[in-house]
Image (tube, rainbow, N blue to C red; front, side):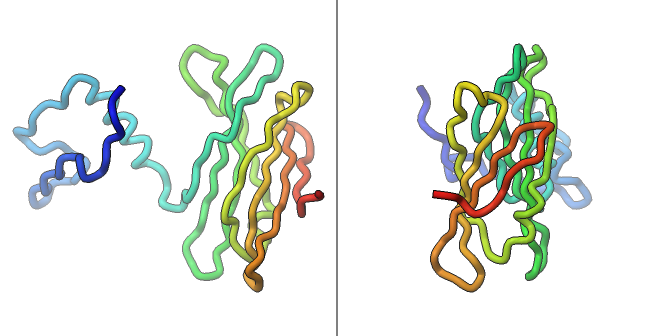
Length: 168
């Protein structure tokens, strides 16, 4: 197994020539090594993310009959001092033979109304009877406090979700 690649181990990119776009290869540049085209495709996917996207996580698997996939969360943070984060749940389908496809996206609108900062969140393991649902627990620090509060989200596709302070 190879060790982790560190940023300082990466070669320093050449400066683009005047008038050349940084995304375009320079004339006379060496061809990419084997697999370079695929790596370029992955880099392009990352580079196409909006700068507003602040967090992306895969938080667990789901199954629904013969279909299955993973839950992905996306936190979007608009610019500005008073901007509030927007939180999305995505259901990615891995049932096909072409990799993952987007099955659904839903915004948890209450998160944008909270006055403070989400400092972390984690998924709870689904029960065997709830393989197509997602439970998340958020650690939230209010703007006027130092002690974090826990909020919980219970999400099932096609049904109203439940979001609010966690019950112990």
